[in-house]
Image (cartoon, rainbow, N blue to C red):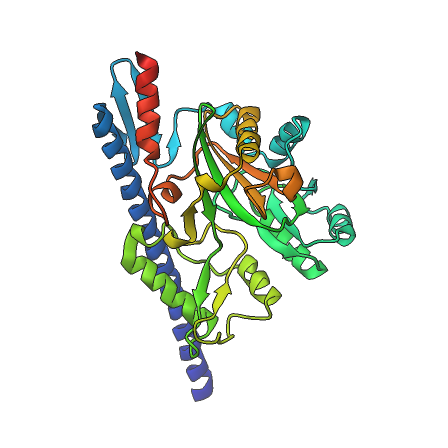
Length: 355
């Protein structure tokens, strides 16, 4: 009886700890989201003040920025510049790849299949001479539901389940060697380019990877938006990336050594984003601009992967992997290198069109 009672108390204590940890994670996420909201509130208000436009709050996180009859409505990085159909197209990966291929813009070798179509999915992965990336076919911004380094049955099954939880169709594509670059355009004008490095932690010789991640997240929480706009999330993308380096969450890296946590870059920090507009060759910029035009986006963040942005995509083996109609501003304001004031540029261009 005492043993049963003891086990019951232990189980109850464990459940309490699990609930408590879940509550802390929810509260932390809410705090991070609120900081991100304050960042965009400040960005748009400063831009409006710079060009002499008025700001009206229509709802929480929703502003109308106006000058006479011309106005722009914004919620964080989302704007009224592009219509719902354009945004729908941009969020549809198979549709975007089709539009780009028709225009001769390189995209990854890929296959589209139902989230439960194991035969088609495994056939593509098994035949590939490279690791694959599994993504939801539509929606899921911020790298959610994306798994890289897929080459085995086990990894494919987990990746399909992850992507399938966000969309009934998935895209499986070749994983491209190189780095992720975000090129920003407004009405066809090239505004900026950013190298987005993947998230890393630095070993101290005593802490495990999991402990280093906890310390990194505490640093981001304490540093606020100037440290990062997100926290590092432990998921299968991370486990795969660590395993490919021969590591796990309990591995203790040597002091000073860097451990790449993910190939997907969305959980990186401020210093992982680097201004590189001067490194882009004209042909890469033209290809990215053509991708934005193909989707029909006025404000577009075009993501490319290439080993060398100073060489045309076809020659370097690079590809366009995404066209975003609500591109984040963070990488252009807070990063290594001079800031580009995206919101101010947008309002200036709209004001110039009014005259």
